[in-house]
Length: 480
Image (cartoon, rainbow, N blue to C red):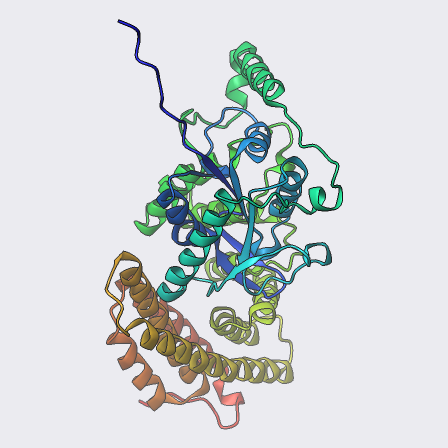
C-alpha cells in the first residue's frame, strides 16, 4: 500500500512590528500601553483569520534577536507595523520590510501620531488609544477594520505593490534568500554550541530557560508586581532585560520600559535594605540619561525614589533633586501625580535649610498652593473624562473580561482623584472640602494600601504646615 501523501499546509504567518510594554509618545507626552494594542486589537484578528501571529518579544531564541527578526521581515506572509509613539525600531523594521517585499504590509498607528514627511503617501490605518487603555467600542470598531484590511491584503488580485520602494522602482526584483537565511541560522547555532561553558554562562547574570520568551517573562513580571511579589518581579525583569542583549555592551541594553520596571521592582523589593534598593534603582535609571531626558516615566519614577530617600534621611540633596524631577514631570504631563508630589516637596523645602529666609519660605508655600489649585482643576477634568467614558461603556454593552478590567481601572483612578483632591484641600486649608473628598474616596472600592499611602502623606504634610503655615495669608490652621 502506498504511503499516504502529506497534504498538510503550514499556516501563514503574520509578523507584528511594534514596541512592547508602556512607551512614551514624546510628541504628546502620553504613555501608551502597547501590549494592550497588541492583545486587544491585533492578535485576536490575525488568529481569527487562521494566521500564526508573532511579535519580536514572542520569538524564542538563544542568540541575537536580529537574525530571526530579519527572517520574519523577509518570509512572513503578512507584516503589520504599528508606528505608535513614533517608535524608531518600528520605523526601521518597516523600512526593511518595504525593501524586501513589494506587498502584504499593513501599517497602523494610534490616531495622534504625527506622520513623518516620507510616510505621507503610505496608507496608515489609525485607532484611538486612551493611554492607559482602549475603549470597548473602539476595540470592536478597529477589529472590524483590520479584519477587512487583512482579508483584502491576503486575497489581493491587484498586482500593485503597497511598498513605496517597489512602487517607485518598478523594475526592482524582491530578493530570494531562503537558503542563505537557513545557512545563517545554522551557523549561529553552531557558534553558540561551540562556546566554552564559562562564556555561555557570562551571557546572563543567571540562567534563563531557553524556552522563555521576552513576552512570557514580562507577563510573569507584571503578574508578580500585581501580587506585590517585588523580589520575584525584579528577578524576572532583570532576566528580560538581558535576553538577546550583548553582555559585553551593556550600554545597548537600555529598553526604557524594561529599565523602568526593573527600577520600580528594585526599590519596592527593599533588598538588601531599603536605602540600598533605592540607590540601586537610581543607578538603573541613570542608563536613560536621567539628567537630560524628557521621558515623563523616567523622571517621575526617579522623583519618587529621590522623595523616598529624602524622607528616610532628610538629605537636602535628595530634596533638591526630587523637586527638580517632579517639576519636569509636572510640566511634561500636566498631571495630578507629579503636581501633588511637587506641592508636597515644596512644603518640605520651606521647612529645610534650602530656604534661608522667611521670604523664601513664603515663596515656596505660595508656589505649593498654586500647584494644588492646578491639581484640583486637573482632577475635575479627569473625573469628567472618566464619567463620559463610563456613560458610553454602559450603553448596551455586554460585560466581558476587558470591560470588567476597564471598570476596575476607572474605579482606581476615581479613588486617586478623590484623595488628590483631599490632599489639595488640606494643604489649602479648606477643611470641609477635605473631609467631603475623604468620604467620597472611602465610598470607592480600593485596596487598603492605597488609603494608607494617602494618609501617611497627609500626616507628614500636617507636620510641615503646623511649623510654618502661619506664614500664609490667611494662616493655615487645622480646626481642633
